[in-house]
Length: 265
Image (tube, rainbow, N blue to C red; front, top):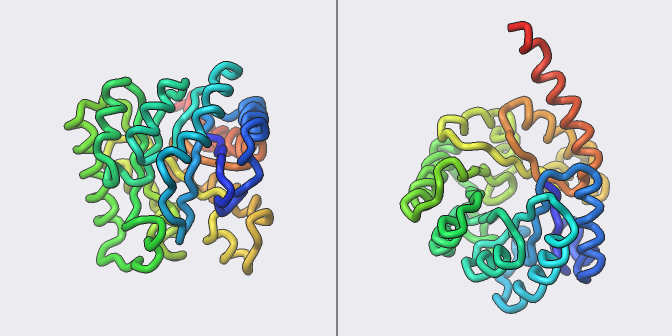
């Protein structure tokens, strides 16, 4: 899944693709590099970010989705927690919904996904982006996240979302500290108990910068690739990345190693 932030303030590439033509060009490039999905978002959800006005979010993402949908066969995902944005994005050509709130901000999002019969990604996050890093205490990290994701799944299915079209995301960096992030990646297989495909998003995140002695966003590629490979070996079905070409190459090798010898079993 290639990340396309149509924002002026995302932590990793804010402003680079804020202008529509540049955003579309980058989406086309990621498709050429091997992205299986292009995830378009118009609102930064970095730690400390404030909510974006609905009309502004629509103004950012809809023209980009409309243009990309006419030019690529790769499915487009809309990264939003607002049901109105999701519906407009689907009308414009998007085919998946990626909700960082796990239906906690706008439960109507599930109805939109169910009506359109599209996949729905449910991520775990504690609180809201503006304050999520102020309370990162868990009595039981995995139990609490599993419980939260299970509730999100139940909400989605109760609204009519096809159980086979639900994807879960443990939410690396969203209301978690460094140790939490590392433990989640190391023990990603714990989430298999939910019976859903697992999406892992580690690309360029701050925990990588901390591990690399304060590396800037542009210096986190190697750390991202390491986390992607470990994630795949530990059960990730999808990975969300900014550097598609490099990630795709790493994934091909990691999958070859992971699957080696299975034909002989």
